[in-house]
Length: 419
Image 1 (cartoon, one colour):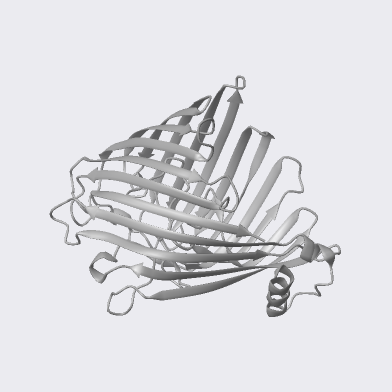
Image 2 (cartoon, helix red, strand yellow):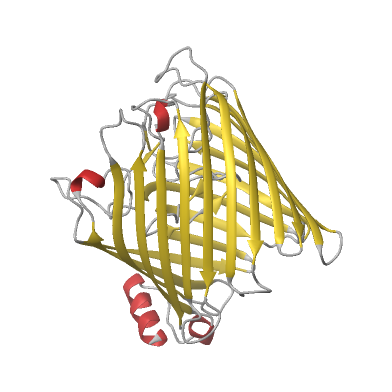
C-alpha cells in the first residue's frame, strides 16, 4: 500500500525516479479519523444567534516521502482531507468553523480537499513548495477544527549550523478550516479591532538558538504586505531540580507596527506574555500574565490564532490595553490510569478598550475551562484518543463583538493508523 500511494503521488508531481531506496524506506503514511462535536450556547440575551453547534466526521490522510539519493534529494508530500456533516442546522452554523456552507446557509453534506508539497534537501537544509502547515512564532496553520488550516507558498528550514534552526518563508493563499478554496490572506477583524483587509501575502524569517536542550531562544520577523511589520522574541527554559521537581518558564514579546500602504490603518501593538510552571511529580501548577499596550490590539491572520502561550477557544485576550492573569492546573494519571490527563484553567482580562464597540468604557472578560483526555494504551485501539472539553466564557463587550459570552462543550474522538 505504501509503495502504491507514493508512486502515484510522485508521478502526479513529476519528480525524479523513485528507484532510490531512501525515497521509499524513509516514507511515512498515516490516516486519522476525527469525530468532532461542538456545542457553543450564547448566554447574552441580546445576541440574535442562540447557539453555534454541529457534529461532523473527518478523515485526514498524510503521505510523506523520503528523499532521492544525490547531492540534492527530492521528495513529495500528499495531504488529503474529507469531512461529513452528521448533524447541523442553518441557524446554528455561523461561528462553528467545521464545514463549508451552501449558498442558502445550510451546512454541506460532505466536502474534500487535497494538497501536494514538493520538497528538496541539501545536507540539513530543506525547501518545501506548495501546501504548507506552518507552526512558528509569527505564522500558525490552525489545527483546531475538523480539518487543518493550510497555506500555499514556499518555506525553507536549515539546521546546518549546530544548535541553530533557521526558517524563512512566503505564503500568498490560505485554505481555511471550513473551506476547500484557496483565498487571499486577510487580517482578522475580531472585536472590530481592525478592518479585515485582504493582502497579497506574508513573508517571515527567523530562527531558534538551542543553548541546551532545555533552553531555547527565538527571534522572528514577519511582514504582512501593506499591513504590518512584526518582530518577536521568545525565551523558554526548563530547570530540573531532581526527578520530582522542575520549573518551566516561557516569555514571548511581539512588537507590531503598520507598514507599506497601511491597508488596515494604524497598527501599534506591544504584546508580552510570561508563564511560570512548577512540576511536582504528576502535578503541574501554572500561572501567567498577558500585557497588551500601544494604541491598537494585537493583529493576527483571519481564520486562525496567534502563537501566544496562553490560549483560549472562545476569545483571544489580545484586545487594546488588555491585561490578563491566568492560572492552570494539570494532572497526569500515569500512575493510576496511564493515558488519562486532566487540565483546568482560569483567565481574566481587564482594562480593555474597544472604541468601535463601546467607546470610552473599560471592559472585562474571563473564562474557565476544564479538559479530560484519554489516550488508549493497548492494542488494537492504541491509536484511539478521546478528549472532552468545557468552557464558560463571559464578557461585557456587547452583542456586536466577535467573541460573545457562551458556555461551550467539545468532544473529540480521533483514531490514527500509521502504516
